[in-house]
Amino acid sequence: MIRDQSLSSKLLDIVVHAVMIVVLIATIYPVLYVLSASLSSPTAFNMGKVSLFPVDFTLKAYLLIWEAQTVPHSFLNSVIYTTLGTAISMLLTTSLAYALSRKKLTLRRFYMVFILITMFFNGGMISNFLLVKNLGMYDTIWAIVLPTAVSTYYLIIMRSYFQAVPEELNESAYLDGANDLVIFFRITLPLSMAALVTIGLFYAVNYWNAWFSSLLYLKDTDKYPLQMVLRSIIIRSELLMQSIKAGEVSANEMASTDITSIKYATLFVSIGPMMILYPFIQKYFVKGVMIGSLKG
Amino acid sequence: MNQVAPLTNSPIKRRSRWASSFKKGWERSKYLHLLALPGVLFYLIFNYAPMYAILIAFQDFQPMKGVWGSTWVGFDQFKTFFQHIYFWRVIRNTLLLSLLELLIVFPLQILFAILLNEIRKNFYKRFVQTVSYLPHFISLPAIIGMLFMFLSPQDGPFNMLLTKVFHIEPINFMGISEWFRPLYILSEIWTTLGWGAIIYLAALTNVNPDMYESASLDGASRVKMIWHITLPAIQPTVMIMLLLQIGKMMSLGADKVLLMQSPLTYEVSDVISTFVYRRGLEFGEYSFATAVGFFNSLINIALLLTANWFVKKTTDNSLF
Image (cartoon, rainbow over all chains, first blue to last red):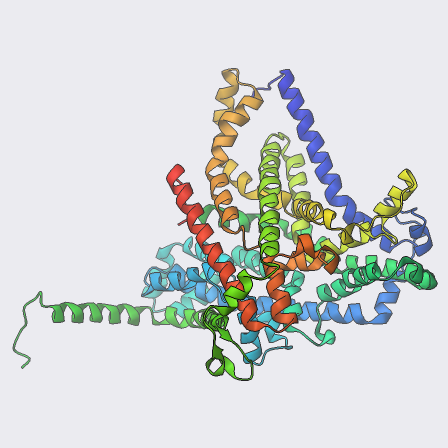
């Protein structure tokens, strides 16, 4: 490309770089701040000394949340929900998407309409709640992993991936005596590993970050996933503070300084796994969205 | 009897031929139907069965009596909602939040995509992109949690800074109605700016680089090129995204608002979905809440169809 040396071009470059720097800082700084605050001593934090890096480095907050057990326990719950949920989602999504990707499926259009209708009509929050109750799944793990198991959006993306597998492969396997089950498990799935990873990650992130289904369907706080605990520790307690007059809190000043660093540490525990995995997995997400946007 | 050959075009023959070809096709794809079965059952149970429960919107539903034992009340629940003192409040709040999102967040994503497209160094571009997608993967409780902690009047760093620099009393941002909408939109920008731009960047990858080259040979400035090449290239995508946005104007989800709101801010923060949640699941008014939700989804469908019709009329694009 021939470089445009005009004034407007230089101005444009300045605007572009300024915007990018603002976006970079605005995105990274809050996350970094949470980490630094969780690693700083409560006194240093309360004096407003923490701005970018930890001050008076300490792991006390993390030790406290480890000992209190609520956070580690809910972390484990989240891991279980994410693993089981993703497995169920993938099983249902891939098998249905594969069937829909084959042209020879009879009633294919009917199946598609049957599925697409649900993108426009749904029973709503209360109906779903009553269903979960009636099925006896209220306050069980099934209420977390089953009602949202298939995402129609991911199903359609998965189907486009499968459609890209050449039909000749299916035909030749068919002539060799393989039926569609064999073709699906032996040929199509191994050929679609990248797609499986992509959609699997989408589901896993959704399950890890989910909290609303726990609010609706879980009663027992022992079953809460990490995100729900985060909500009670930070948001509920802040709201509680709003209703208590400032004067009454000062009696517990010492305790509340610890609570602040616990909040920051809990927050970091909830986003930490994503931050660590993110650099390695982000390219799959972008690819997935690209395919979804081009074919959807 | 079998000897009597019917005319080739008789309806019976045609139907039986159709039936036999259907049977053959079914036979050939029986394993595919088997594979589809678990997924189809999922849709039946978790998507279609709740639709049937919408019936309770026309009842005075008692969980003990079930859908068939409860009294039918016709449109009474809907009438109650239309006359409810909070009717206009939740409609207005839902519409305003969606409208602000449409007017502020939506154009910013497009602008960000266009600016990203102007970066020539590939590594730099990819780095900014990667960082900007990050907030999309942070859970809502964490995002709203950060908002609460940073803005906390007790020990939030933002208030500490305000006190230090301007010597003013700490402000309880999350508890003040006036701050609810700005904070909602700001956090929305933070979460979706990069991720929302992907779809436009995908559209821009289809632009032939030669177009920019020949335009620059003709002496076009870069600003001109944005106007005449980049914008037309993403225009169809923008139209479709706009359509989708308008289609979901009234379907603002409950989750983010529920995390942010408190009774102190209900005046501006209570939207239809949070109203449904509170009345239905906290107060146990199942029928009333279902009626509100059903009314809401009827509006959503009408909005989506209208928006689709409108875009079809004015441009060549449409969603369905």
